[in-house]
Length: 250
Image 1 (cartoon, rainbow, N blue to C red):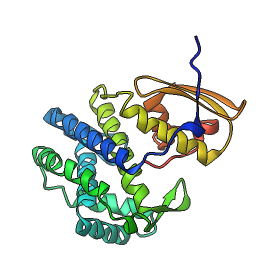
Image 2: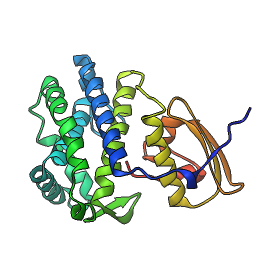
Image 3: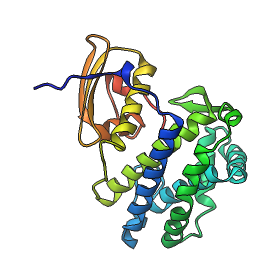
Image 4: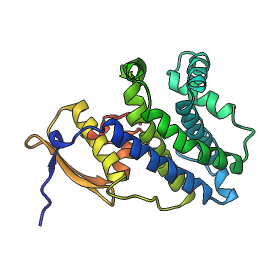
């Protein structure tokens, strides 16, 4: 029997309290994954250009530290702008984050992340209401956008950690820990944003533990993909055709 698709219009946005729970779970899963790696895994290349697992983990730790500390956030924001030059600011920020943590051992990274992960999630949840509306200039697929700081803290930072957890699993040959309740919710939110961005009709079947069936409008493209791979393509880690050529920020 065919599964009745969920209309994208019925997907509720991730609210502040739900975002807190997702951040806590995702941060903890990243810590658990890194803690389980063999030492040889840390030098394996990832799909992120010029980053091995250690560099990717350093960036993830740095993002958690920046969310947990306003002082660190301001530092990396300013230093990243200077380092970026003509590139997008985020490229400069990640460059600074990794460079400033080259002295850390794999054990240092895991221990620091285990300490920072829950504090980072709590700090994101407690972000003061006026700060949540601060504008954030960003670039998505070559297009300039203006985000709100609340969107960065509630949605993007969790997506970023989630996608990097998949990157580490792919680089080290491990099967990612995926559940409908956690990962399926992140994927559904990605689907909703993807649908808003292109605005066209589709029928989408996503397979796997984080999957689901979604639709927007009548007719349009019929797409079937594994849920995590669907998100990888939308993040720019793979090539997509048709509606899957569109990008969604992670």
